[in-house]
Length: 229
Image (tube, rainbow, N blue to C red):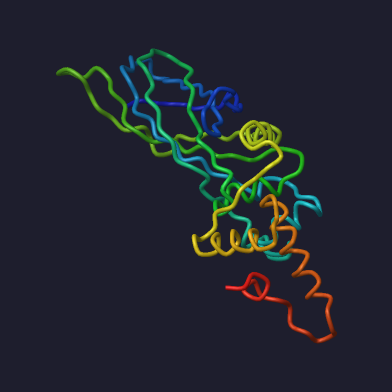
């Protein structure tokens, strides 16, 4: 039976990736001395938000995810950020390997919303490993599983995430919209003669804020009132 120990040496923004990607540099140690021919490695990356402190600005940004601070005992729980795979070449003793961590800036993904709300400091990560190990058996190759308790923790600086996002979305972000809603936005923009999507959203927000500060007791404007069908 193999005895593995995993550790994360570094996580950095991949500078030449076509899409947003972090890279985790892993060290894998096999402590029984057996020769490993290959490993088909799977990794679940979790964020453990309860393992760091949050200032007032971060607390405000995280309210939609976890509620008020008084609820955090119940709501601030680990959640899965991503799953990824790689193949580890043969080694004896220990080896190092790069694990690609493909990312998204989609605000429908809880990990992106969480990371966007952070200021300084680090992101507490837990990497949970599984997979198939190929070794030399008594009759050809032997096949074993990576033990279920193999994991590693790493405090990734928030700045690493920011640099990656800035490289692919400089001074911008994006959200997904339903086709019907997007068509209504486009119609609103065309009728108002607005040049950019930024101007379109600002015009909608300005109209909504004017409705909110209207007569006392008046109901706030709904989207279908601001953007006619």
